[in-house]
Structure formats: structure tokens, C-alpha cells
Amino acid sequence: MSVTHTARLTEVAALPTSGARAVEPFELDGMQLLAIPQLAYDIPGTPAGMNGGDSDTELLLLRRAEGTDTYEPFQALPAPGGEDAEFFRIGERAFLAVADIRSGKGPYEYTTDSTVFEWDGTQFTPFQSVLGFAAKQWRHFAIGERHFLALAQGVTVPGHEQENQPSRIYTWDGTRFAALQDVDSLWGYNWHAFDLGGEHFLAYADHVRPSALLRWNGEQFEHVQDLAPQHGRAFAHFADPQGETYLLVACLASPSRLLRWDGERFVEHQVLDGLGAREFAVLDTEHGLYVVRVNFVLGTQAEPVTALDSQLYRFADGRLTAVQSFPTTGATDAAVLRGHDGGLLVAVSNSLTADVRFAARTVLYRFDQ
Image (cartoon, rainbow, N blue to C red):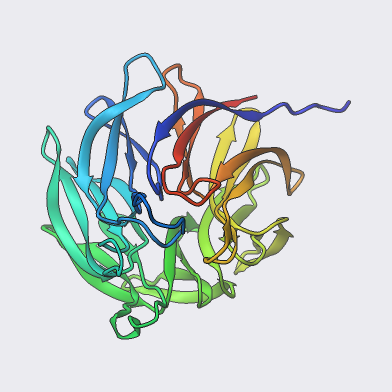
């Protein structure tokens, strides 16, 4: 007997944002919060362009209104050229790390601080700043009792070649984050940490150089294999009911792929249609496993196409099959959270409008099955 799958995403709320590059939901002291870093504000009277704007921006910290799925302003944090926000805890302490790619209104300064904020019981205050170059993402993860914070950074900008820095992994020394290891990189974007077969892995995405899988050897992370030759943006992993482990690799200007672990390495399992992928989010539900893919841009930086369809996939019989397309504009992130009624929501940040302005919306969708 055939089964009709009716899973879909339905918009329930939209939040005014500007150049939103990520959306990070978390719970703190009984509050449901969203952290949204913003790349740029529109400058009146200037031409549209994805690399322009005023990057002396703030991170929006929003709190969910009780009994609803609407969010209200809670705190604004200084975060010029905001690219990413990562909430994490170490013991009883709570932190929010923000990656900043640039500052200024043009010409831009790419050598800039990215700040780790700490919760003081009332608000987030600066805890530690790291001077980086074109920072894109912080990722916190733990191996046993040891905490790590990895910064993906770098970009090939003419005139800034000598300033470029490798992506870097930091470790908590009990009082602060200290540099542990540099990762060979040129245009870093993302990290994804996961455990498999009793070992600890870290996937790293780079736009220019190969995206790579690293493994912890007890002292540092060593290269295991390349995951994509170029254009890497993000990862997600999941396991099927048969115990097979899969890794999704999002690439912007080349095909994104679903890889399968064969016991020693990840091998290609499925090539996904279309270009422009920026991020994945996995929804593992009682009725099946689904994946949200959001697409960023096609075309060139000078003439980008931002109004793209993004996808909801269902995973069944070892394959991802698209069950819904939904409109996005310069989408940069997708995150899964619980709504006020306990149902699943998906938050999607849109960084550009269809006419390449920064005043785009971050949208909350209800996941229905």
C-alpha cells in the first residue's frame, strides 16, 4: 500500500533583520532566545550589492513571548559584520561566541575582533576577544571533559593577501580559550563535530581549498580525507534505522552530496540537484527523517540571483527525495527549535532581498506531518 507524505513547512512568523547570516536558538534561565548576527545595513542612496552596506552592525538577541511563537527584542550586542553566533555552556557558565567578518562602511576592515560573550545572570557581557581575519563561524564541541572552540576564517580579497589567517581551533584552559591548532585553509566557512565508532571527527568547510574531515588523535586533529574539492559551506550528519551513518556536504558553486560511512571513510552515496547550497538542518521525527536545505545565491558577486527555492527532503530507502520547495532570498542558515506548543519549528535566516538589499526577513516555519 502506498503512503502519501504530506510533510511541509508553513510560515508562522517573520522577523525584521538586516543581512542576517545565522540564527541560533537556545534556552537560558527559562527564556527561549534567538541570536541573529547581521552582516550589514543598507546605506540610503547607494547601489544594491551583496558586498556593500554598513557593517558596523549589532547582533539581535530576541526573546520568545510567553505562549506564542513571536519574538521580541531582548538585547543588542556589538558585532560588526556579524556572520555567526554559537551558544554553549562550560559547567554552570553560559557563553555566546560571535564571528565578525568585517567592519566599516567601505573600504572594509577584515582584520577584526570576534568576541565571546558570557551571561552574567542579566545580560551578555564581553568575556574574550580574538583578533581574526574575515571570521565566518565559531563552533563549540567537547571531547570528554575537554572543551574546544573552532573559528573558521579567511577570504581572498585583493589587497589583503598578507593579512589572511588560517582557521584555528582553540581549547579551554580553565580560564580562557587558548590557541591549540591551525587548520590549512584559505577561505574558511564552517565546522561540524560528531562522534562515530568511538572516534571524534571534525569536518571543515573551505571555499577555495578542499573541505576536509579531521580526526582527534588525543593531542590534535589530523587529516583523514577530503570531502569536497572546493566551494564548501556546511555539513550535517545522521544515521538511518539500519545503523548507516551519512554526512551531508553543502557546496555553493558545485553539487552538494550525501556521503556514507563505509567503516573507514566517507564515500559518495547521492548527488543532490542544483547549486547554491548554504546550510542543512536535520529533523529526526517519529514519522521519519527530514532534511532542510537552504540556498544562498547563484550567479556572480556582481550580479547575484538571490531569490531561490530552498528544499525540504525526506530520507527513505537510502535516498533523499525533495517533498517541498519554499521561497528564500539569500538564505544563510536553518535551525530546528521547539514551538510554544511543543511542535517543531524551523528558523531560516535570509540575508538579502530579491533586489539585493540587506533588509530581508528571518522566517519561522512550522513543520507539519
